[in-house]
Amino acid sequence: MAGFYLFYAKQRSHHQVTYAMMEDVDAKIRIAIETLEAQFGRQTRFSERPPMDQLIATILSQRTNYANERKAFDRMWERFGSWENIMEASLPALTEAIASSNYPEVKAPRIQQVLRLIKEERGDFDLNFLATMPVEDALVWLMKMPGVGHKTATFLLLFTFRKPVLPVDTHVHRVSQRLGIITKKINQAKAHTVLLSMLPREAEVLLNFHKLFFKHGQNICTWSQPHCSACALTKICDYFYSQKQNIFLT
Ligand code: SF4
Image (tube, rainbow, N blue to C red; front, side):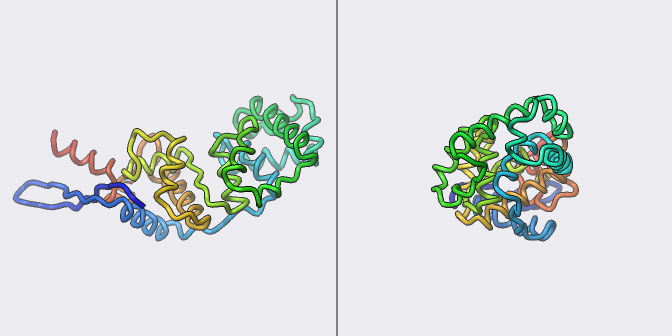
């Protein structure tokens, strides 16, 4: 792991409060993981879903919470009962079945296109061949599918196939930036490779990191307003430090 980070220790001299800074991004990541593990527990749960289920569920989960994704998937499956039937279903019927997922009118044709492509190329709907494919090739293969970007592909490869890749969603990206693990210039697409280069290439470690940062971003370090007063990471947070500086400078 390499890079920089600022570690802040509050110091008092006379009536002034200042923050000392120390550079060490490895330590920052380690402290963040240990602290979030103490809060949420170590994250060890990979997906038990079959790969096809997980791929389509991941498409349904885009901009949708877990409960509504599950509802959409279960309703779709109850209604059509097989991938073949889902592929052949009328678009309005499929759109209606997955309506609890957001943007069903976009996702329904995408799901059918994905199923057609897989059927054309593989002859069936079995994705288990990805387990033995090199990671880079598997990413390229998956990202040929409409609606399957790097994030969706890495979700499937990590959660289902336990490959050493790192999905970076909006929560993981935001928390990493606010803490100062990655700079503000690194967008979500680039953050996959930058964060991965800072972490051990082990699926268990990457799953734990992803889920801890996801939970923290969803519950505490939220997009609209980070709840810093309830956060255990203030000592290692660039954002928190910059806010304090603003207060003391004004
Ligand atoms: S201190 Fe605030 S900005 Fe920093 S990680 Fe915690 S909630 Fe997010």
